[in-house]
Length: 76
Length: 76
Image (cartoon, rainbow over all chains, first blue to last red; front, side, top):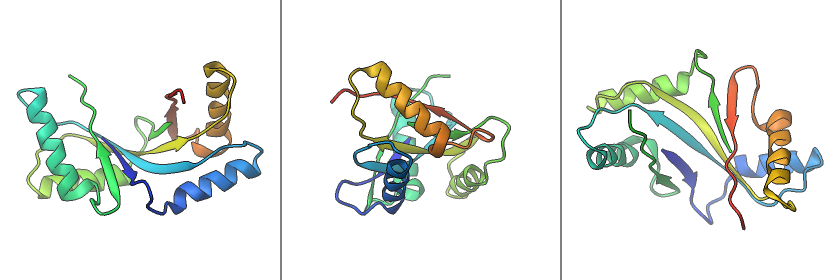
């Protein structure tokens, strides 16, 4: 899943990336930095897998006050 | 772009996520944690945009010894 800072939330890591890239001569626009978490889960179907990962995001992986998450499933 | 620890490279963040999820009662397999960086670049075509972002990864965003990166483009 992808966890990103919500729009409007200050993102110091993104700002650091932005200014470093500009100093290296890359004329970039806004940069935002988030996390990608790759996980193996056992589930009988994709809907169950998604529901389980959603629970994990709510309970551990994403801070709902400042972060949004996106789940992508891959079959195994 | 997505930056992930290479296979075989120790990923303490992933291990922490793994054991925390198990303690919460989620029977997950391996977890790996990387970064997602969203960037705006100006380019005349997708190939040029990709080449530029590849440069940025090599020069700043990914550590080639321990990380691999993947670039996804979105038109604007």
